[in-house]
Amino acid sequence: MKNLVVLSGAGMSAESGISTFRDAGGLWDRYPVEQVATPEGWMRDPSLVTRFYNERRRQLLEVKPNRGHELVAELEKDFNVTVVTQNVDNLHERAGSTRVIHLHGELTKVCSSRDPGNPHFVRELRPEEYEVRMGDRAEDGSQLRPFIVWFGEPVPKIEEAIAYVERADILVIIGTSLNVYPAAGLLHYAPPRAEVYLIDPKPVDTHSARPVTVIQKGASEGMKELLGLLKPA
Ligand code: APR
Image (tube, rainbow, N blue to C red):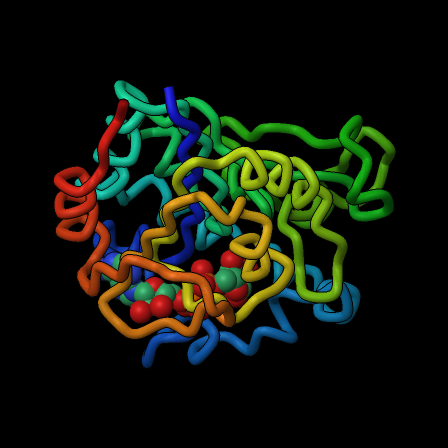
């Protein structure tokens, strides 16, 4: 089977009702990014940050995967699929995708605020624990913090993602403005022979001269069109 890598961003989940970051009315218009998505914001006001991510987790319980997520999961019938997502929701998994690399962390997990990179202190929350409180502690005794990669922090999963992209026969980019590195640079690791597809309702600058088949549609419609173009064998 051919190796197919999906690189997804916020647009993948837009049709599920989760807003993107940089579109008008997006999350970063409504919440100052430096307050809720940087280590400095956390140090200044951890309870505000905790509330922000509690709200994001509550939303997870109200949304469901859209047709786009489902069609990505269905690709596994014909391809050896790896999903590399910048999204912190769990909609790819809930749609049935089995190998999902979360570059920017996961809403359903928490970690130590003293040692966020230490996998030993990372813990999956059950839905009834989604409301994290100040005073809830990681196993090292520090305040629990969201298991989210904030701006200015290392992206430990990028090496694993690169390894999959380097072996890709097909790369499908869906719903990302490609503004944020290192995720935006993954395309450059695709072998020259790899076919590259991009699904997004708006034009996206890939910062690359290589040929890309652009499907200028939303995730669900775009995935449907992609399935008609892909040749499994
Ligand atoms: N289907 C597909 N794509 C869509 C849809 C849709 N229905 N609606 C919007 N989009 C596209 C937008 O046109 C845009 O190109 O999704 C993209 C969303 O871009 P951003 O909001 O910049 O989100 P993303 O690229 O995922 O951001 C990357 O930045 O803020 C950080 O850590 C955060 O993971 C995030 C990272």
